[in-house]
Image 1: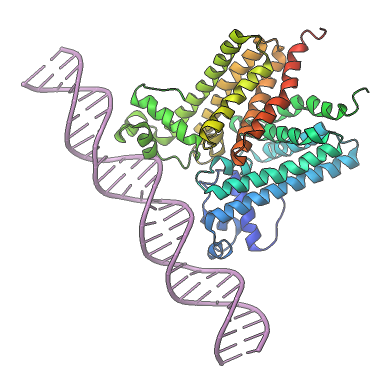
Image 2: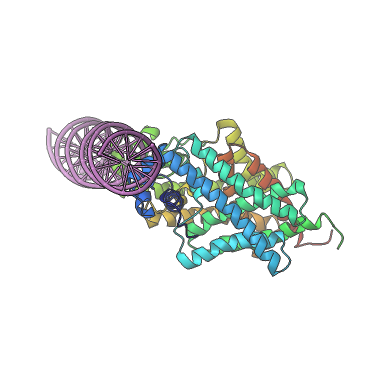
Length: 204
Length: 204
DNA sequence: AGGGGACTATGACAGCGGTCATAGTAGCGA
DNA sequence: TCGCTACTATGACCGCTGTCATAGTCCCCT
């Protein structure tokens, strides 16, 4: 929910991501994107000569960058507020979703997940964009984990586990219209995550 | 991949699930379903007077039952082959996907996830069908866990965690066209899962 | 033989999708 | 004033979608 008062082009990319979050790629029309962004319809073919595919791909790239920035922000906040831990980072990632769902309903999910599911509808480049988005999300998480004391060898794996569990819990939460899956995943994964830093200094 | 040589109605439900697995709900046309099932187009409105919504809902119910049966089969097989453990069950669930992906490519995902993502496009009943599908999947997993020695209080939570991680890993694997996320999730989650049975008999 | 139910076969309809084509406007440098 | 570039505005096209309407066929039961 940032307030992107940039140019119309950026607004359209943002709106596309926002609309893909609900309904998926197939249900998101280009006219609808322009309308949602308050941008003129004619600008679509001007800014995105590559058509819908380009727009969707850029929306995914935007989503990936956004997720990466969120991780950095979580780290900064928890560094100020006390001792950050892997489980705390994961809890913060999960909390973003529980907050949104309790506040605004379960209408929207992760745009990258939505695009991945509909990858057959939009050519193969969309799939690559989704993979890149996951990468620009996993990277900061893994870096954060190493910064918190997790051995570098496991940081990547744990980051993948965290994002997998989060994505799956988002799905279940939306289906059930209940935050339960998200909170469950956060509490169940916590000991495993914090144990990973302890392995570097096992005894007390 | 069962071979459902039942009536045309069941074939259409199966084909619908199969097609939703790729492309999602929006990209799956009813004519396409009939074609894929080798069923006459006229049968659609005969067997599914509720339209696409009914067809999708039944496909999700079918997928949920299928997933539940798979869990039971994993249990039977591993009971014969030796000592089943929670991590072994999860590994078997993951292996089904890695096997499919290495053998047949990454074209298809989980139909329930796809329908959840597109839930805004198809009325609210589809969302409930997805929730029910998750429930008929989580149930057997939780039962299996208690049968393996996991305290009943944690079995449900761990089942949710397992399915969440699996669904998320499926997404990432499809995006990356790489089984990596699936195997990572299986190995990283293994100690946590097996530790849950040990808590019942901690020493030794 | 005939009636009736289950199933199949088409065709039409209205709507929406992305994309292209064409024309129009605004601002700015020369 | 001209010309150029960036951007906007429409409208049309074609394909596809889900859904409905109307017949048509088959087969079993009485």
